[in-house]
Length: 191
Image (cartoon, rainbow, N blue to C red; front, side, top):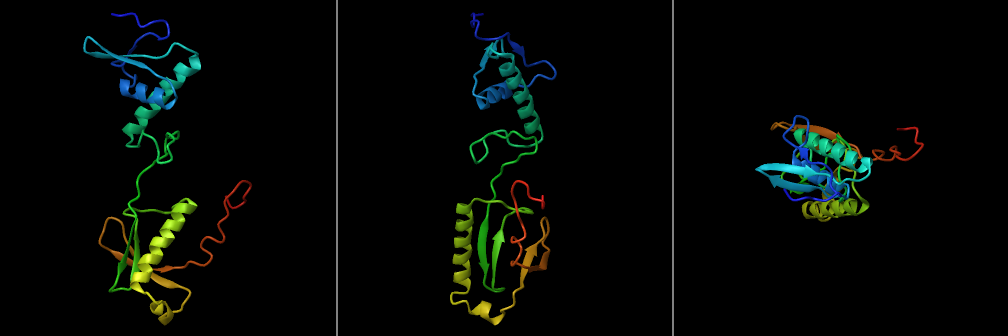
């Protein structure tokens, strides 16, 4: 076996119980800005961590275990859409296939998230994009606004598809005050 130098620690046996697979060490080191040495010796993968400060080695170990656990729980281990890596055991990043469509027969504009979503926080740029798409579909359905003038009530009716079934519920969609009372920020008493 070739000497790998003093900059690398002792080999880690990834076949041992409780030791993450070599891919998790490699991903962990990359995410923390370090490198690991991964070699195949006699058909077995061998990992060597940098021989440096204990906090670097411990950090790579902890991160490898964290990533392995996330993967077991079906959570992504790759960069989030923002480019940063997940740091919380419950943090989840996923694409939301947003579809906006018009139902001419019902005279409704549909916003389909293809999943149950309780709340959605988006950037101002995405909010403007979403508003433009909603306006475009609403204008195609009701170009002069005459449909809205027939029912000038401040409360409108929406139809909500129940996830996992063909059931459609009729619901009241109230927009005034929906966000007005929501205050977010440091020191806010509303949580």
